[in-house]
Image (tube, rainbow, N blue to C red):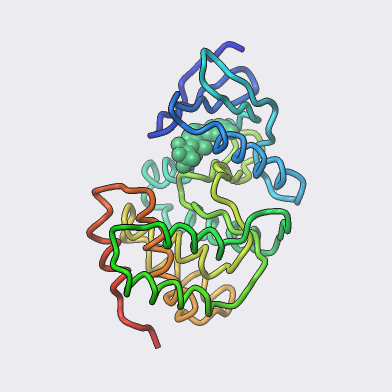
Length: 250
Ligand SMILES: Nc1ncnc2c1ncn2[C@@H]1O[C@H](COP(=O)(O)OP(=O)(O)OP(=O)(O)O)[C@@H](O)[C@H]1O
Ligand SMILES: [Mg+2]
């Protein structure tokens, strides 16, 4: 397989174009199980009626695990927002609508969001036991939903295709089934960190369109923020700690 063009480089992988495929090549130390899990999760979601790149191949290229999938020609919403700042709100609405559409789906075979959040928070050593207990109790009391949640639904993970003009959701590594409000809280957190001017508008637009009380989303913020600490990104720590300590929303 010829890796023709580098499309993006992240902490754990480099994505190349190879003909009509995009090939995500993982760094050598990235766990094999995580690569196979990402491919499996994506494959499980392929046929539920969302626009996503389908998995074509999982292989080892020069000693590194790689996932080959459909190449979606186009730009991510993050790129488009940067290039067309006057259209930011339009793109934001497209994202909100897409996230709502995704939440209308389910995929019972996937892990439960609550279980994933529980194990991430339980394993943290940067928060004290009392705080951990409070967060886990809050998580335990949350209603059990079965909506498809992306887990990292951000402007970086949606590509508008040059072929059909439609948005395609990528990067399904963290997909689970659970509460839409938790998935929105996770998007809100990312926006607060990297596009702060969009964060409140995003949450408000979602709440308005779905007639969700904002409190339902806000209640998830401390839990979702704590789970994000698992990623161990030093620049994020300060803001995340603030979200964890946020007082009860009423
Ligand atoms: N199927 C695809 N078609 C076209 N471009 C893609 C495709 N998949 C990924 N890309 C490009 O590569 C970038 C990174 O891909 P992706 O979001 O899957 O990885 P990542 O964010 O580094 O992953 P992770 O969050 O799991 O570390 C995307 O933002 C996009 O620019
Ligand atoms: Mg990504």
